[in-house]
Length: 373
Image: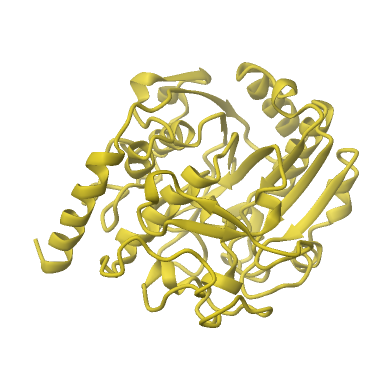
């Protein structure tokens, strides 16, 4: 083991021994759906019913829905639109909004932090030929917010990580992640070059504002015009703005495969996910976006939903042909630590399939091997 690997192992051993705890089991619904048509709504409705229904979760409440619209609006894999490969599809977004509204949600906020922009989220959607009014008409009160900066809020909300965190003690986020009763992660079924898989948990990496955690964020306070990626999380090439909570260990390894999974685990421990919904009808294999090498379009024909993000991502990992109990050095975590294990050790949920109740289509019947497709 090299010096970096030894340092990572030593640092991991200390906090994990104290943070490990009994974790909750979960229920996850799996549905098959071949295309983005009216059948999406019916499939999701059955899946939500299998989970116990949405009404008890959302009636009379404000629901925040974090979308997965990674990259910029013009990113494409060949001639395929983003929603066919690396974005959650608008049909899945609209169906989810409709079903949340029918279950009695008082307000639904669609949230995302589009890269390098503070323009309204609706404008970003329009650049990708989406029609935001379709979502507004799907439920009584639908709002949009770009959470890459303050947005419509006057101050950032601070979320402390239980037991002190793995990478940072806490995170400063847009107010919408606090000003809600229910938090939904609406993600895509994909591999990820840095994190192995990107599902409901890795989707939450994008709740961090680049005004604080971006490469060009100022040293002292958040900026109004963020640019670049999230260097403090990827390369460790700088710290976030001093206004944000400090890192747990300033000497932690700079390896993205060490830091990114830990930031993800921190975030889902600090800002719990109440409902995870994964779009795997169409997707891409080999990476998280068209900027990755050797990516290709795939069609798993799957929808997945669960009330625990770790359990949901564990089932998704198995559906993709991987072992959710795997860790660094084993697919899909060849070069990174497992977000599943880290979140499990923080007490967020379980990755053990024997403790997860899978409803609807069995994993064995729905499995789509991402490496052999």
